[in-house]
Length: 266
Image 1: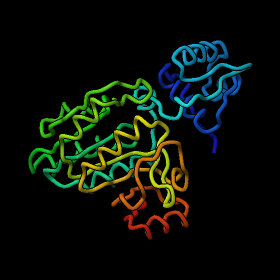
Image 2 (image 1 turned 30 degrees about the vertical axis):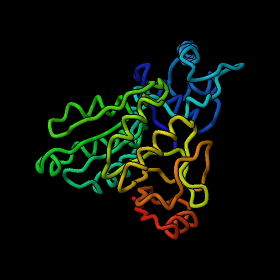
Image 3 (image 1 turned 120 degrees about the vertical axis):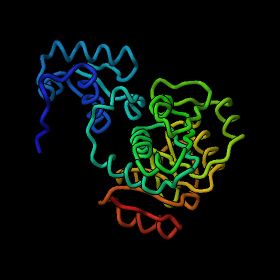
């Protein structure tokens, strides 16, 4: 199916499309990007220069290649991307939340969507206050505007790539709190290796969030199942619910269920 691109797309939206393509292909040429976005090659070269300056890509002859940053794009570069899979996962995860709960959320595009789905639930607003505890600056910025939400934003060192704060300050605060449920986004999940992400400092925060929670909900689209990345978060057995997309690897889904995970396919 041919991707339809709006030629009037602004710069941030162009960057979002290019970075999303890089996350899939690993490299992008000037001509390919110009055709994809229906803009001039001069515009694409300027965009590539800006993305390289921000360390979101690396320049090479005739185009750019992905850096590790391109796989965990800042919210401001991806918020305009329509993603039906992510929306379905977010809404299904939000439906598992109960009134009055204390909810932990790490950073990421899927957890951001889940936070929005939670705070938009009219029944939660009607039944009193919920509490969101997060290390994601963008999630906190949105949640704090909801009158029925108490938002606890963790301190720490902010990572511009993902809007998350990490480090001993964030861990220290988390260790003083108890959560009813942790809703966590991951880079990979398998029955054998458990949940993993690409950076140890982020894994440490998610591990602490899980340790302080009675229940763990993992939100991950189907393409992340059966994979393993660098830093271990927790074994699959520690996850109570996985909300993922229909079409995920059947063997992996069944292996996760055998490990005690309730798998919700949406």
